[in-house]
Amino acid sequence: MEINLRWWILALCNLLLFWLQGMVGDATGALGLTLSVNALYVIMPAVCLSQGWGLVLMFLAGLSVDAGLPIGFGFHAVMFAVALTVLHAYQRSLQKAGLGQLIALTIGLNIIFQLVEAVLLAGPLSSYGEYWLRIGSDLVASTLATGLVGWWFLSLEHWLLTITGQEMAEPENV
Amino acid sequence: MALKRLSQLKPVAVLMAFLIAWWVLPVVLKRWVKTGFYEFQAPIFYLESQAEDLQSYWTLRGQSKREMIAAGRDLARENARQSVQLQEARNLAREVERLESILDLPSRPDYHYEVARVAQRDLSAWWQQITIRKGANYNIPVGAAVVYRGGVVGRVREVHAYTSTVELVSSSGFRMAATVLGEDRPVTYQGLINPPFSNPLGEVLNVPADIKHTGGQPLLLVSSPLGGIFPAGLTIGEIVSLAPGSDGFFQRGSVRLNPDLGSLREVAVVIPLYEEEEARTDGD
Image 1 (spheres, rainbow over the protein chains, first blue to last red):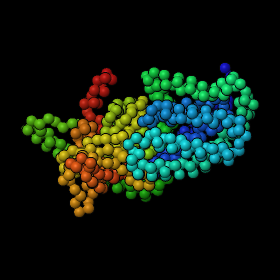
Image 2 (cartoon, chains in turn red, green):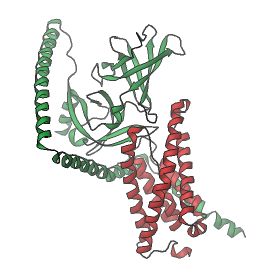
Image 3 (cartoon, one colour):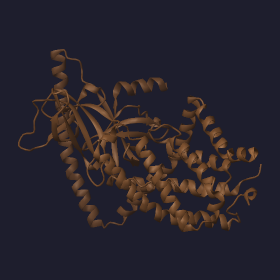
Image 4 (cartoon, rainbow over the protein chains, first blue to last red):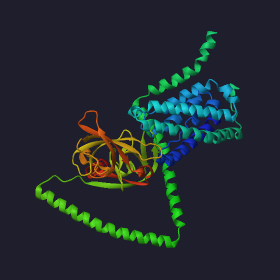
């Protein structure tokens, strides 16, 4: 079986992002803020990988996120998989997009992810004003963080693919 | 034409195949996968926490001898003060035992405290939890109380090979029996939310109608032994407001928790001695 180097590079980048997100969450938690940049797990795999390999990566990333959390195991995996499938339908256009456009897309997707989480995980908290205040502040902070981190992270992924001689598109899609 | 339409549905079909494969996976297998994923990533934050300790160590190494001597002197004073208090506590414990034997009372539950470093904090809008650097390797039981010098921290939710996850007292799913300091009637405490840039909040339910704030002083909410997990009298937080509940008999109010909960470095797991003996017997 041929080793898909592009998949491994993006998997390692996602592992790095997972570690950094945990470290930042550890620091900002005491302030009552959560910086979520989950959309960054999805964007490059949707642009560069075939749907099958992309879904495998999304399940791995989503299950890693879910493993330590008190939520249904697979919640994030399913969310990432659905997002990847939707984005994959526009893969040819996304491969031509510039960094700024990809960051704008990441911010949009991140906002959608956070709103989905806010609604599905709220439970009885939804009747408290403080809950929506917290969600609002998390949304603003995460949007700013996605812009800044996204610029670095997407550039890193693109640079790693370039120096290893990988094209942005899978050979069968070119 | 029809073939082209069908090929357009291929991505959705692939997604559905993945989702169905996931949903039909047996629960036991999912639990096994979850444990595998957790144990795979646990060394990441374990090492990160160790690196933080090393960083603190090198920061301390950089301090002058004069500062270290002053810190040593302060610690010696604190040790002397704690030794006197320990002596008093031992005398009181002996007195309690003597009274229990005279009055033929059942003995009070005894606990063993396992001190553990905090490896990671995860304080989101939906859950607040910390990971500590002790797990099954130290016989930490699921459901054990976790405390610190400021009072209640939470309860052990999951125990892994070398780490445990603790649900904080501020987490929205957290409930425990409590009492207002100076009262013996039980009330219910539940975690609520951690608003941005302010203290975490909780809620107190089933407060008798005659309990009121006096002189604008907040009432102190402490743990009750009724739940069978927490020792009595540990601080949970301050009741900042009370209002009549919907039933008209009881009140409900909001509880301000200690802001230190978000920056804990060290906690103690309270293990009832009978559980420890059971774990030792199982191990043998």
